[in-house]
Image (cartoon, rainbow, N blue to C red; front, side):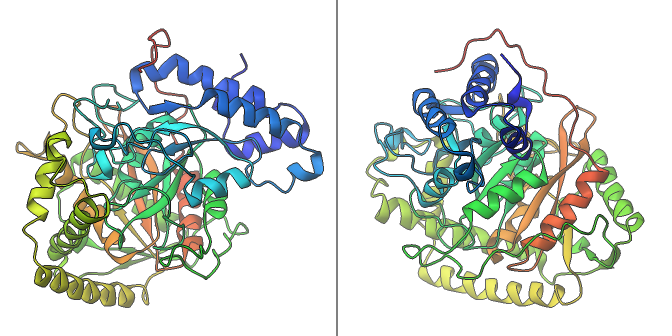
Length: 479
């Protein structure tokens, strides 16, 4: 079987245009890769083989003229299980809804189909999207394809692992506290969390409605931009979506000439491990060598950002589970230990707490608005160290201290969700354990073009790892 699974979306579109390959061949190649390696990785909850092959055959019969109008013609796409796919499992990674079947596609899934994408399966997520390890005691877990003893991040761990291991060129994910960027960073791929409201959320489960951000994962910036364009746009049935159009990516510039890049040491709330500090410093050096203008900026009371985020997130999540889903506390015994613990903690948050946190949120928004008068983009780490192990997913050793894995990530990732800012994860190398390291590029609201341009330039200086994770292709796929 030809190794078309190795191709990115942009490359596949060129092959389709040249008549060198058919969608059926590409889909079969991806399913061959899934069959070979997902027995170890565990990226997929449900594989939609028959449906995907049927769609591929239908697309193969489409006229050449019609193909040219489909931005994702014949591109296999994996879907994070928090989004509904008609007639597929809709459990959202939880025993609580283990028997649920989705009745209709989420809006963003419909848009992918209408653009010619082929949905190949649903990827595992942390239960209800509320965690960053993608581990579950009974519903199945996902491993990091670069080291099967480590977690892939979360909550979009299945989507990130699928893309990193070559099972899909593009995957749909979501980010409420870092759930696109953390898995992208530790799996060595690209992921963008766009401006809040850029992509519709309708059709799936929400974690915290005022901070949920759907977005794509891919192995290069061109594919990421392509997917983002298809997914974006106003939805009449989703009041949170933006009416403004996605700005065009500047492809004429190949450097950072005149781009004001911010470095904010006050946001470095968690000390970076030596490898991660070295990679961050190399990124800053690269910015300067590529004609970027480095500006040091600061945020007052940055240490209060995460507590503010946590209050809002927990209050909204509690409302979703108690009122929208109606599963808590009646189904408490079916929740995973970590998620039910967070729900119990969330039950103690008062209306006064929530309102005060939202006032603090406005104060931080004003500070970031002021910062983006001085800079075009902000570059920060995503994690302070490598991911936890699958045997002890909640804890990591960091400078001779055992701390929560969440603590080495979320201090860096929650500001962008709290404030709805576009940000892109960019792989920049490996740590001493052979695990990928990433940084994030954040821009002002509505300026995904600035974020993606900077990410594109960085990707030329810090190329994504060559080759593929070493996986044993003889192990049978997980059920």
